Amino acid sequence: MGILVAIDQGTTGTTVSLVDADMNIVATYTQEFPQHYPQPGWVEHRADQIWQSVLEAAHGALRVAGMAGKDIIAIGITNQRETTLVWDRFTHTPIHNAIVWQCRRTAPQCQKLREDGYETTVKQTTGLVVDAYFSGTKIAWLLDSVPGARTRAENGELAFGTIDSYLVWRLTGGKVHVTDASNASRTMLMDIRSGQWSEEMAEILHVPMGILPKICGNAEIYGFTENIPGIPNGIPIAGMAGDQQAALFGQTCFSAGESKLTLGTGAFFLVNTGVNLVASRSGLLTTVAWRLGGDTTYALEGSAFVAGAAVQWLRDGLGILQHSSDIEPLAQTVRDSDGVVFVPAFVGLGAPYWNQDARAAIFNLTRGTNRAHIARACLEGIALQNVDLLDAMAADIGAPVSAIKVDGGASRNNLLMQMHADFSGAVVIRPQTVETTSLGAALLAGLGVGLWKNLEQIRGIWKEDRQFLPQMNTDRVAQMRAQWDKAIRGVSIR
Image: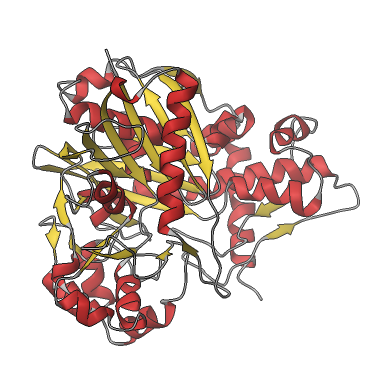
C-alpha cells in the first residue's frame, strides 16, 4: 500500500505530510519562506518561493520516511485561502507577487463598495462581509495596478488563482486551471447557493469572468503530475480544500451540528450546517465546507485573530516565558487569575464583534498580581473569546453545540482545553493527530482516488486522544463571563 501526500501551503511555510491508509502521519517536513512587506499594511509572497518550499518540503518528507516518489498514490492540497495570484497562461509567470490574505491594501476599495450600498448584495450572494480579507478586491487591484494587466486579462492571457489553483497549475505543468468549492467561496465572487461564479459580483468587483478557474468538488481527480523534480509523472492530484475546511474534514465533522476549533496563531471555529445554508445574524461567515459528488455541505465560521500569538507576546514582548510551552505550568502555579482579565485584541477583534479599532488590554492589575496571574488570564482570554464564537454559532443554528473537536498546536495545552470545556459547558475532544489540516487534505485525496469508499469508513478510523468535561461551578463561570463582557466593551476606548 502506498502513501498519500498532503501539501499544507500556509502563510509562513509549507508542510508536507505523508499519510497511510490507517490515517497515521508517517512523516512530516516543513519548509519556511519569507513574507514581504512593501509598505505598512501590505503583505506579499513570491510565487517562486512558495513553489520552491513545496518541492523542498515534499522531498524532505519523503527523505524522512525513507520513501520515494513511486510510493505516492495521490496528492491532496490545503492552503491559505484568500491569498491571490495572477499569472500569464503561456509563460506561467506571475504578473506580481501574491497578495496575502492579511494584506489591507484594498481597504479603500472595500469602503467604497460599502458606501455604494453593496454590503447586502455581497452578504446575500457570497455569504461574506465586504472586507479586504477576501480575494475579489485583490484581483481588481492587480489588474488595475500592473500596467497592461486588465487588457491582457480581458484578452484571455491571464489566470487568477488562490494558492490551491496555482499549485495544481504547477503540478500539472500548466494543463489544469481549477479551484475547489471551499476556496472559491472565500473570493467574494462565488454565488454560494449555485456554487458557480457570480456574474453580478464579477461586474461589481470589475473582475473579468475569463480569468477565473473552473470550480470543482473537493475530492476528485483534477489532473496528474507532470515534470516535477523527484516526483513521477501521472500521480493524481485528487483532493483540495481551504485550510479551515480541511481541518473540519480531518476532524470527521461530517454531520450537521458537529464543530471544530483550530488553535494556532489565531483561532478558527467552524460548525457543519449540512445542506442548510445558514445566513448568520450573529457576525459569522457562511461558507462552503465541501462539495462531494455534486452535493454541497455548508458551515458557519468565526475567527479570533489572536490565540497562540498572545502567548508569543508574553514570551517575546514581556519576556515572562522562555518557551511558549512554559505557559501551562506557570499558569497552574496559581488557583485563578485573581480577577485579572486579558483581552488579546492586538489586531482588533474578529467575529462576532468585528471591531477593528479594539486593542489588547489587561484589566484589574493590583500590587499582588504576578506573572502567573497574567499567564493564566491570557489563557482564559483565549478561551473566552472562542466561547463567544460558540454562542454566536448556537444562536445562528438554533441549538447548543454540545461537543467541540480541537486541533492545532495550542490544543496540546491541557489547561487551555479544560478552560474551553468549563466556560462553554461543552465536551472538548482532542484527536490523536492534532495537525488535522494536513490530515483533511490527505483524506480528501484518498476519497478522490477511492482509497476510502465513504465518509463513515473514514470516521471509523479517526482516533481520539482525550476528552475534557466541564468542571467549573456555573456561578463562577457566569461571574468570569460577566467580567469578560465588561472588558470587551472597555477595549474599544482609545
